[in-house]
Amino acid sequence: MEGAVAVAKEKSFLASLPAAIWLLSGAIMAMRIAEVFYVPILPLYVKALDAAAPLFLVGLVTGIHRLSLAFTQPLAGGWLDRAGRKRPFIIGTVIAAVASFLGGVALGPADLILYRIFSGVGFGILTLAAMAFITDITSPKNRATAMGIFSASTLAGAAIGPLPGGLIAEAFSPRLLGYRATFYFSAAIMTLVGFYAYFLIKERARSSTGLPGQTVKKIPIWAVLKNKDIAMAALSTFLWGISYGALLFMTIPLLGEKLGFPATKIGWVISAFGWGHVAGAFIFGPLSDKFEKRKPFGVIAILGSGVLVILFGLSENVW
Image 1 (cartoon, rainbow, N blue to C red):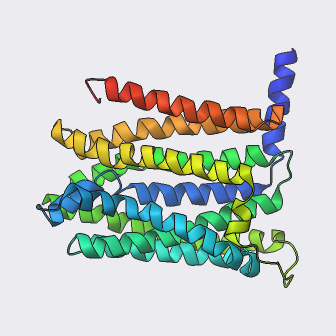
Image 2 (image 1 turned 60 degrees about the vertical axis):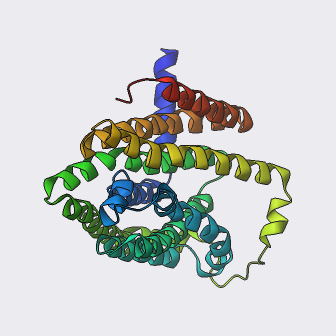
């Protein structure tokens, strides 16, 4: 009986979250699905454009998106404080969609790098706008749960996207055309998300950003990083991102190709990581709110991820 009451309370707690959080999370999930269409085959795409491309260049094409995103978000923070949440989200979506389409017409690794930089700028802006919006409409009592739902939506997109991306890549011949097609499909979905956000999320963001016209004092980045907790959280996330980014988007596609995996099978392997992330976000977010502790769950998550990577490296069969 007590268990049933606890489950009912948990459902009620999730249901009590603002509807805008669910709508926004759905939009972010669709954006992430679209982006990840081509991520599993990106190293193979670079090799198809230039068979002589060194692995350093392949890695640069793969990683420059996240690097661009990382530089964009701190710089865009002040603009979001002045412009609100709705307009930056739409602008970021448009930039990401255009960059994805241009990626499909790339002539070589050099211009593909440029388009990936623009893609990172777009995703950096729209993700920051979405996270700021969630912060606006939540309180400390339910913020971790809301952020968990938001995080789960991005991770679910990352888990769902590789498989259809691999199917799209295999559906076209020659192989290079299949790789390009993943970018075109990605751009089409991002465009639809832009319309969705304009008619639905945009209006909700307008009513929840606080006081329009209010002047917000800009805080320098260095001043923010003086906070030890923020600096350590940023550093740990940065290091985690380096390791997992290299594993998921470089090691697995290239190793999978060496083992004779088709694009669909590579997508399955990457998706398995994504679904594990989704489960973790839904579990640790509510637990973090319930116990009002953040650090222990962060430590468990990061150490647990490291153990899994070690086990992956010790395995003899990627599949």
